[in-house]
Length: 147
Image (cartoon, rainbow, N blue to C red; front, side, top):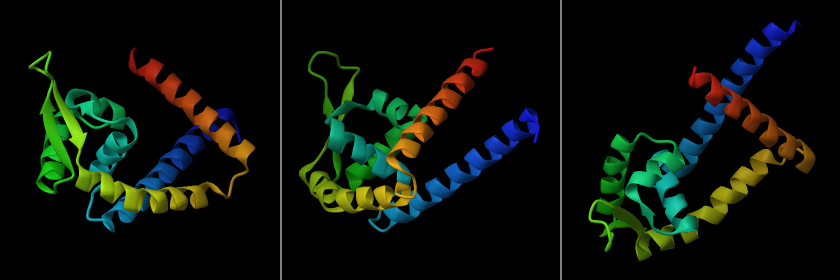
């Protein structure tokens, strides 16, 4: 297969794999009454601590206009609260609550186990190489967007 056809095939394979992973993640977190974006926010706050709401969207790859809605939903569920920045009134932090912390302590280990099991089909070396290759492709694609 010539390189151009291989590149097109690689794109198709990556996109299909990405969609399959996304569908699996959606199904997994739906068991806990969350959507994928809500889970991503909780996971970020659980592992990294409070974050400025303006920064969360960039870290979990969601449009900033959607983050406010997601934070509202998590706040309604009692998993997150907002806290103003004492030094800059323009900055609002999202903070995981005790209820959100308890939820993540309950569900994250099982989620992590499932993801490890999924990737156990690859050797540690293959997984490392996959991560590196996908990063390289992502960086190159980002460069092309700037044209």
